[in-house]
Image (cartoon, rainbow, N blue to C red; front, side, top):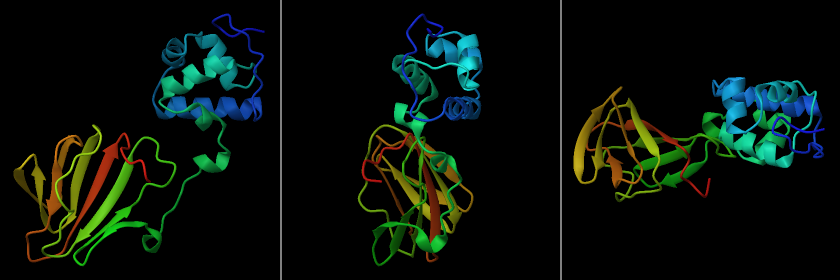
Length: 199
């Protein structure tokens, strides 16, 4: 048997065909991709992809790899157990504290494995900061003020941010945050795609 591009489908999945197909469809629907769009990315046909999602055919490793690339995931992601795709609840008291000083606590909210984004929250007492301005990778970063007020520094330019304010910038720009007010402050960071190699 061959796939829609004429390649052999001798590859046998490590998990049942229907489970693999369901995962492919789940990723595709979550990314709002049509069968045709993903099939084009994988250089196969919409008909073959539809059969694959329904567990009616097998696919070559090459086709699966191209499907994964089209979905923005890795090949192993297609074979993770169903547990890996279940909702993960993180209690406030269980948040990993990745940066702490007398005036600042920073917590990682997104759980391993990091995929499409990473999320942090930080609590700043008056005078607290996120450390020296630094750059990491070249992703999109958003900061949202959840409580109080902070000063965002981007490439040496300061931007006052208050409750509900947000800002977006590239992580390749030197940046830091500090609380220059007399009240505690809390912010949320969202980074996409992840730039951390340690979390």
